[in-house]
Amino acid sequence: MTDPSKVIHVRNVGHEISENDLLQLFQPFGVITKLVMLRAKNQALIQMQDIPTAVNALQFYANVQPSIRGRNVYVQFSSHQELTTMDQNTQGRGDEPNRILLVTIHHMLYPITVDVLHQVFSPHGFVEKIVTFQKSAGFQALIQYQSRQNAVVARTALQGRNIYDGCCQLDIQFSNLDELQVNYNNERSRDFTNPNLPTEQKGRSSQPGYGEAGGTYGLQATGRGVAFPQMANAEAIAAAFGGGLPPGISGTNDRCTVLVSNLNPDRIDEDKLFNLFSIYGNIVRIKLLRNKPDHALIQMGDGFQAELAVHFLKGALIFGKQLEVNFSKHPNITQGAETHEYINSNLNRFNRNAAKNYRYCCSPTKMIHLSTLPLEITEEEIVSHLEEHGTILNTKLFEMNGKKQALVMFETEEQATEALVCKHATSLAGSIIRISFSQLQSI
Image (cartoon, one colour):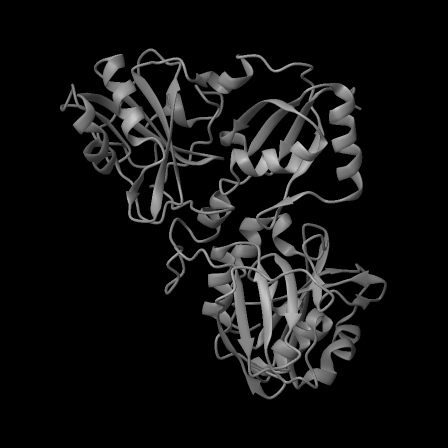
């Protein structure tokens, strides 16, 4: 166990979380003397005035889950007893001017190639080389200018700006590298001083020095084109949707609350709504409207998750009603006696394995997928657990990675949806089961 320290280590700090958000989380406990954002790791280090202040903060958050902008963050004592300037230059990045810039692009909805980057950065000086790569922080690039002054001017002019309106935000730091090595001239790397370099050989990483594990940054070589990380959980979104976004999803929505209408008030409740909408993102809170019993407000974890819910659930049938799902005019739901809180629920699916859960996002189907089943479960027990919700046409029980799972096909999407909202997170033979829609057409 780490010894108490006045430095607090904060994890799961998404790109939507600002320094001011973190300050508001810890300032009630005392004076904050230093704050370091480790954007590449989705982490932060906060130095309090003294150890007792830091202890008070961590004791409080041991009983209350800290959350910022609908995202749970996790806090612990840092192994550092004091923050130094070296901590701010993690992985060779900091504020010491250099002619090579490290650029991270947030909210990236459109493909960013070397040509796009050159168009953005070349007005500020001669760009000699550009290398792009994928890392946990998202899509990144190293841009080498002819002079250090060019790089300083570019960083000053472009830091925090968007390449496209409302997206592709630039986060620029100085690299500690002295020279970029470029092996190929293509859409992912370019040496503008040597136009005669070959294009990439098929199946090979364009820049082994920057892309392979154990290289300059210990990156993972993908050998793939540019992905589209953006918003919260950027890397997970990119991994889930194969470098793009589902058809009809813009990725630019920032409204987190959705309004659901035409509900069946005799059959629906907050937990059933949670079971359905949590397929598309984490749920903060839900409120059934007393003056309109067939209406409900649902606050999602972020705007992207809310857009998925609106897109995939608009027109869905459940309990004999066709749902209307739209963005609410309310930015959030005020906590109160009539709201149900889910922000700290361990049933929120996207706190773990976010990429896998984004991959499950789809409109309701006739087929549902059951996981976390007990090893000794039988198809007969599964059918018995679900058959009250409709006609089951087929089932398949299988094992994957030593865990039992099942597919169940109903006669209609409405029956499958009812089974999901009523039986997700229920107990079956001693295990709490998880249910999602399957995109398979048949068993």
